[in-house]
Image (cartoon, rainbow, N blue to C red):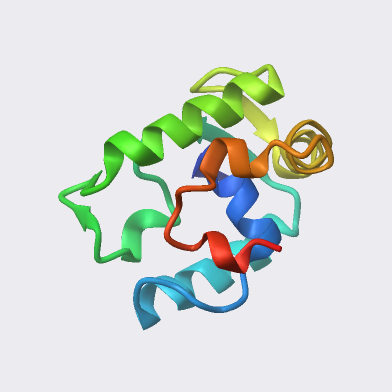
Length: 121
Protein backbone atom coordinates (compact mmCIF):
# COMPACT_ATOMS: atom_id res chain seq x y z
CA UNK A 1 0.00 0.00 0.00
CA UNK A 2 1.11 3.56 -0.69
CA UNK A 3 -0.25 6.81 0.76
CA UNK A 4 -0.04 10.44 -0.29
CA UNK A 5 1.23 12.56 2.62
CA UNK A 6 1.81 16.30 2.89
CA UNK A 7 5.39 16.73 4.08
CA UNK A 8 4.43 18.83 7.11
CA UNK A 9 2.07 16.08 8.30
CA UNK A 10 5.29 14.24 9.12
CA UNK A 11 5.48 16.55 12.13
CA UNK A 12 1.77 16.52 12.94
CA UNK A 13 1.72 12.78 13.54
CA UNK A 14 4.36 13.10 16.29
CA UNK A 15 2.08 15.34 18.34
CA UNK A 16 -1.42 14.19 17.38
CA UNK A 17 -3.67 13.94 20.46
CA UNK A 18 -7.02 13.04 18.95
CA UNK A 19 -8.00 16.65 18.32
CA UNK A 20 -8.69 18.19 14.94
CA UNK A 21 -10.81 20.28 12.65
CA UNK A 22 -13.83 17.96 12.88
CA UNK A 23 -14.77 14.49 14.12
CA UNK A 24 -14.39 13.12 10.57
CA UNK A 25 -10.93 14.62 10.28
CA UNK A 26 -9.89 13.28 13.69
CA UNK A 27 -11.15 9.79 12.94
CA UNK A 28 -9.32 9.78 9.59
CA UNK A 29 -6.14 11.03 11.27
CA UNK A 30 -6.33 8.17 13.80
CA UNK A 31 -6.84 5.64 11.01
CA UNK A 32 -3.97 7.09 8.98
CA UNK A 33 -1.68 6.97 11.99
CA UNK A 34 -2.41 3.24 12.39
CA UNK A 35 -1.80 2.62 8.69
CA UNK A 36 1.49 4.49 8.78
CA UNK A 37 2.69 2.44 11.75
CA UNK A 38 2.83 -0.49 9.28
CA UNK A 39 5.65 1.38 7.46
CA UNK A 40 4.11 1.70 3.99
CA UNK A 41 5.59 3.73 1.18
CA UNK A 42 4.44 7.33 1.13
CA UNK A 43 4.67 9.94 -1.60
CA UNK A 44 5.49 13.32 -0.09
CA UNK A 45 3.43 16.26 -1.32
CA UNK A 46 3.06 20.02 -1.09
CA UNK A 47 -0.71 19.80 -1.42
CA UNK A 48 -3.81 17.99 -0.22
CA UNK A 49 -3.17 14.38 0.78
CA UNK A 50 -4.86 11.33 2.28
CA UNK A 51 -5.07 13.07 5.67
CA UNK A 52 -6.85 16.06 4.12
CA UNK A 53 -9.67 14.03 2.57
CA UNK A 54 -11.91 14.54 5.62
CA UNK A 55 -10.80 18.06 6.54
CA UNK A 56 -13.47 20.77 6.37
CA UNK A 57 -10.77 23.14 5.05
CA UNK A 58 -10.36 20.94 1.96
CA UNK A 59 -12.31 22.67 -0.79
CA UNK A 60 -12.35 20.52 -3.95
CA UNK A 61 -8.88 19.13 -3.16
CA UNK A 62 -7.31 22.45 -2.16
CA UNK A 63 -6.75 23.63 1.41
CA UNK A 64 -8.24 27.04 2.17
CA UNK A 65 -4.91 27.77 3.92
CA UNK A 66 -2.82 26.22 1.17
CA UNK A 67 -0.24 29.02 0.99
CA UNK A 68 0.65 28.53 4.65
CA UNK A 69 0.43 24.71 4.55
CA UNK A 70 2.48 24.46 1.34
CA UNK A 71 5.16 26.67 2.92
CA UNK A 72 5.31 24.27 5.88
CA UNK A 73 5.62 21.39 3.39
CA UNK A 74 8.48 23.03 1.49
CA UNK A 75 10.36 23.78 4.70
CA UNK A 76 10.00 20.20 5.96
CA UNK A 77 11.19 18.80 2.63
CA UNK A 78 14.18 21.16 2.57
CA UNK A 79 15.13 20.32 6.15
CA UNK A 80 14.95 16.60 5.35
CA UNK A 81 16.87 16.95 2.07
CA UNK A 82 13.88 15.69 0.04
CA UNK A 83 11.66 16.97 -2.78
CA UNK A 84 7.95 16.89 -3.48
CA UNK A 85 7.10 13.62 -5.16
CA UNK A 86 9.67 11.64 -3.22
CA UNK A 87 8.55 8.05 -2.55
CA UNK A 88 9.92 6.82 0.78
CA UNK A 89 9.04 4.38 3.54
CA UNK A 90 7.10 6.13 6.30
CA UNK A 91 9.52 5.19 9.10
CA UNK A 92 12.49 6.51 7.10
CA UNK A 93 10.69 9.83 6.61
CA UNK A 94 9.62 9.87 10.27
CA UNK A 95 13.27 9.38 11.30
CA UNK A 96 14.39 12.28 9.12
CA UNK A 97 11.72 14.54 10.63
CA UNK A 98 12.68 13.46 14.16
CA UNK A 99 16.42 14.05 13.64
CA UNK A 100 16.57 17.03 11.32
CA UNK A 101 13.61 19.02 12.60
CA UNK A 102 12.37 17.97 16.05
CA UNK A 103 15.68 17.07 17.75
CA UNK A 104 17.38 19.93 15.92
CA UNK A 105 14.89 22.35 17.53
CA UNK A 106 13.50 23.60 14.21
CA UNK A 107 9.79 22.80 14.63
CA UNK A 108 8.67 26.24 15.80
CA UNK A 109 10.76 27.89 13.07
CA UNK A 110 8.88 25.84 10.48
CA UNK A 111 5.33 25.78 11.82
CA UNK A 112 5.19 27.83 15.02
CA UNK A 113 2.39 29.92 13.50
CA UNK A 114 0.07 26.92 13.11
CA UNK A 115 -3.25 27.06 14.95
CA UNK A 116 -2.44 23.68 16.57
CA UNK A 117 0.98 24.84 17.86
CA UNK A 118 -0.03 24.63 21.52
CA UNK A 119 -0.48 20.83 21.18
CA UNK A 120 3.04 20.25 19.89
CA UNK A 121 5.06 19.91 23.05
